[in-house]
Length: 227
Ligand code: ADP
Ligand code: MG
Image (tube, rainbow, N blue to C red; front, side):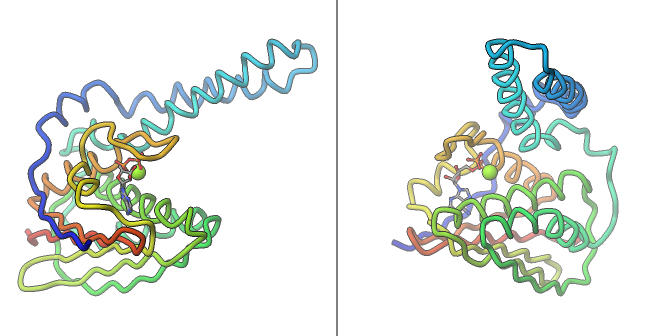
């Protein structure tokens, strides 16, 4: 059941959705969550009140997750535009997710080999890598671990990014739903991560190819023309 499909166009909905969730939500969430944590540790609140506070913290945590998966979508592209080697972003975000990988017994392998430059939005590309890495790691969670492999190379005037995992894999049907808003098979999933990925790759005129085998793993290949 090996599936291979090409998806480049998914999202015009994105801009509409993006308007509703914004980067600026993050700060008030963090502040509120901080005060609630203090309140939760108070010695004078009743157990019932503490229950309310803790529930509020859980809900704030959920809102935070949505913003995290969705963060860069809402940001105007011009703000963080660079002309650079996006391999730097892949490496930076690899370091960021390393603790998450370790917790889930995932080994991270990488080989970076690209000299081509590209015009891109730094935040968006970073978020895109994080979302793909996170999904890979989460797909290996219930298998008790595995390997996340990241390679970046170049072919002709294209930058080729490959992100592979040895996780649970997807059926053809599941692959076809990738990137649809709120499609998630996870208990605590937002279903916004892949939406963000498709939207970002689309903006840099890239193409995403998904190869997956149920039970074996998944590889995303992203081909982006150099600028
Ligand atoms: P979320 O991670 O919050 O569920 P995403 O948009 O990031 O939302 O992913 C949507 C769904 O696509 C996931 O719930 C999962 O079912 C599937 N998926 C994405 N990446 C992978 C992967 N590497 N391996 C298996 N399934 C995946
Ligand atoms: Mg995700």
